Length: 143
Length: 147
Image (cartoon, rainbow over all chains, first blue to last red; front, side, top):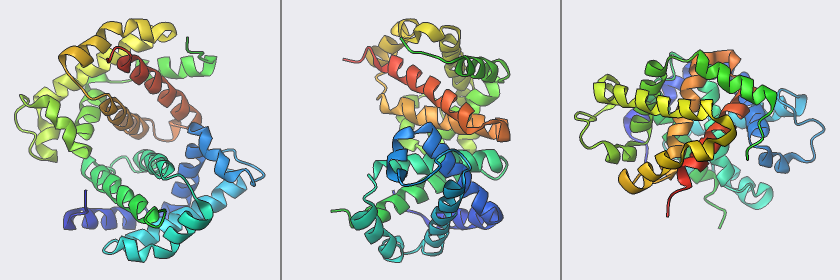
C-alpha cells in the first residue's frame, strides 16, 4: 500500500496545518495510548508518572511527534530517511511492531478531535497509509 | 460477563443518547469504505463507490450506516449481556454475510474517529477507553458464532 503523489501531498499539507499544535498532539496521542492500551506501559516502567499529561509523557510525546515530522520531511525515501530511528527501535528499544499500529490509531483519534474539519476522509486515508509506511520503515531492521 | 464501572455505563449511554445515528452511521461507514477500500467487497450492489466523493454521497451507504448504528443500539440497551443479545447478529454476519471479523475492528476504529471528531475535547482519554472497551465487547460478541 504505497504512497501516491496525492497521498504525499495530502500528508504534507495536513502536517503543515497541524504543526503548530505538534506538542499537544504528541502528548494527547501518547497519553491515550498508555491509558486506553495499558499493555503499552510496559515499555515505560522506568518513568515516574505514566498518567495522561504527566511531565515524562509530555516530554516523550514531543520526541515522538518530532520523529513523525522527520518522516514527513523524508516522505519520498522513508526507509533511508528513518534508518537511524529504525536501528534504534530494532536494537535498543525493541518495541513490538504491533504497537506502532496502536500509536498510529491514537494519533488519528487526536487529529480528528483537534482538527475535525481538516481531518476529512481523504486526509484520514492518507495519514493512515503514511503511518503504516512509517511503521514499516521503523521495523525494517528488526530481523 | 463483562464488568462495567458506573463511569463506563454512563459514558456509553450518554454518547449514544446524544448521537445522531444517521450522521454518525453514514460518516463511519463511508470512512471505513474509503480508508480500507477492501471492505467494499461486501457492498457490490451499492452502486458507485468509485472514489471518496462518490462514497460520501452514496445514499445506500448512508442508509446502511444507520442500520449498523441501530445494531449498536441493541448493545447499548443490553450492556450486561451483549453476547446473548448479539447471538443472531453473529450468525447473520458469519453464515449469511460472510464478513471477515477483522473488518469489525476496522469499522470500530472509524466509528471511534467520527465520535472523537463530534465530541472534540469531550472525548477524553477516559471516555475513549470506555468507548473502545464497549466496541471491543461488541466485536467479540459478533465474532462468537463464527465456526
